[in-house]
Image 1 (cartoon, helix red, strand yellow):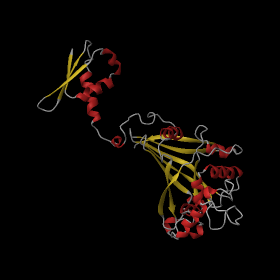
Image 2: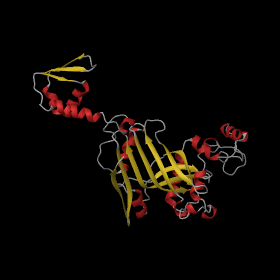
Image 3: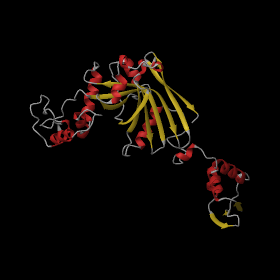
Image 4: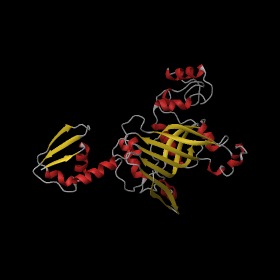
Length: 339
């Protein structure tokens, strides 16, 4: 039997539409010839017959493939991250993280806050440092932290107490402007939104929630311990940054001199914390190589998520997850929405 189809892609579409028929073609030969209309004629030889609906089905599928949409932004992989089933954003993001683990900068995220003195948005890039394990001694805190099938949801980052983001979130209400549009916003000054883009799988997570800063004055022992552990887990270079001059001020050469003094391994002078005034301890360590206690300006920054807007560009799949409070039981309600 010989089947002629006007366009080569139609054959591939047919084989995709009828995968069970692939075994019916023990010998497959494909040849093409060009005609005056620059169209290709496909000749397929086989000892088996094809279903009568083959040509019509292939033509219909080919026409649908010509419809261009948001999927053209992605890599064209229709399967994307899993399939189109509704699963929690925590399940989805675990897969996304695993796929991007080896990509440099794959754990960089953007955090947006609001400058409440001007009502203008502020956005910056920070490093995601994992999910905070729940406090086993507090039932409600554990329920919030593990609202997604016992998976921790609170997201860890770090920041400097001298940074703008800290001031924007913790600014006293008395310092806010009298702008009438600002009324009623004082109670939500710690609201923020994270954007995490995964280039490997063409996925975007917009995670909205409340920020909490854990400093040396924290009253919760478990959070204090988490801050201490995070400080110890930092690289030497990251720890040094918390001994730099105040961020945002005009740069001076004294900053470089202090960095060089710290890198040269000075004796630390008479400073009670193991390093002299005006020097930066190399790696945030003392003269014996032991990690120094975290300075007061080091903060563990936590995002308590309340909503996640997920978009997968490879097949235009979009899903919104909202946290639902029910006493000591917290769950995520997932809904598929239009992209």
